[in-house]
Image 1 (cartoon, rainbow, N blue to C red):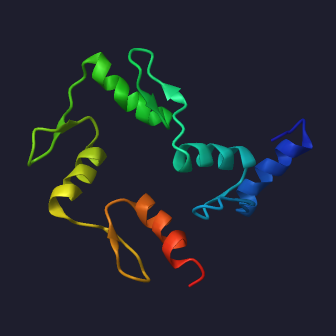
Image 2 (image 1 turned 135 degrees about the vertical axis):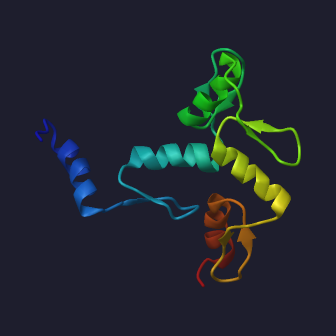
Length: 134
């Protein structure tokens, strides 16, 4: 692989070393590039929604969320249903995540206080905010 700029080679080498020099001060996630950290801060911690639907006014934090949303406009069926209510989902993972509300199950648990969460992102936020320095 050839690089015309030394900075591009430096960024590429981080893949091989596993080094992630840019750290989020909120959740301690680490990133190889400052631009990825900046994007993470905007979407995860500030709730910025940079991806807009061209059909309606909805906005999303990721392209994949926008893509899923577009299924509403294309008329594609929502194949995954909630067993309790009539909610329907386009993706299996969304249906499974939703069902955790009804079961009360929290598959992600804190190793310090055993508090359980339905989403891994909630546990990631919990750790530095509650157990920082422990």
